[in-house]
Amino acid sequence: YGANNGVYYLIATNNNPNPTATLIHELNEGTHQENEAAELAYLEFTARRIPLVNALIDANEREFSLKPHLCPHHGLPHSLRIWNEVEALADSFSADKDILAAAAFLHDLGVIHTNEVIHGNVSAEKAEAILEKIGFPKEKIKRALAIIREHDDYNASREGIESQLIYYADAKDGFGPRGASRYLAIYRKRGILEAGIGSLALRNIEIRFGAISNASLKELLRPSYEFSQRYFTNLTKD
Image 1 (cartoon, rainbow, N blue to C red):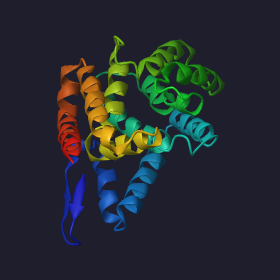
Image 2 (cartoon, rainbow, N blue to C red):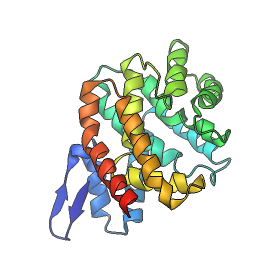
Image 3 (spheres, one colour):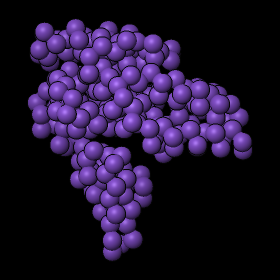
Image 4 (cartoon, rainbow, N blue to C red):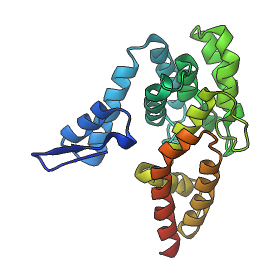
């Protein structure tokens, strides 16, 4: 996150692992939406320098272009933010970046093809053909699909650091200020009345936060989680 008054630029990197992206957001000097678009454009530009990630981004865009009106909050911007998070943490946790990339860009494909809230299994079915087509390392496909399959299963064992990182990054994009707006938009799209959104969101974020087993990742997520707790608690009082 950052802030500027035209003279001084304050960049707080604790909640964004890419300070350059944050700086671009602040220096763009447009509306919040325009600044966010500039930040995402930078994230996409840097991500596409990696051939595998470039192919995965193309696949993500092709799939979500089929029904863009159904899933505005699960498309490429969401996947880019997840990749931004997990790529920054991968070396510290000795995680496989190929597997992280596959899961980051393909985990939500199921929302295009099912009306069910839990869509991991459908995402994995669609992802398998894509991974084979782009020449993804065969020995890593099974693991990548398992992570995609369990990313929205709160009871999954999540064996392996790659699965834990994807779950953490997906949860983080649902917490904090951006996450609050995503919850509101997604619940409204599902036809949930305003009066019920606060309590439903609180219940969901409690479950999502509680499902994080890695202590280090849990502490990284805690500030965003506590923001969401306060926000939706206040919403239930309005």
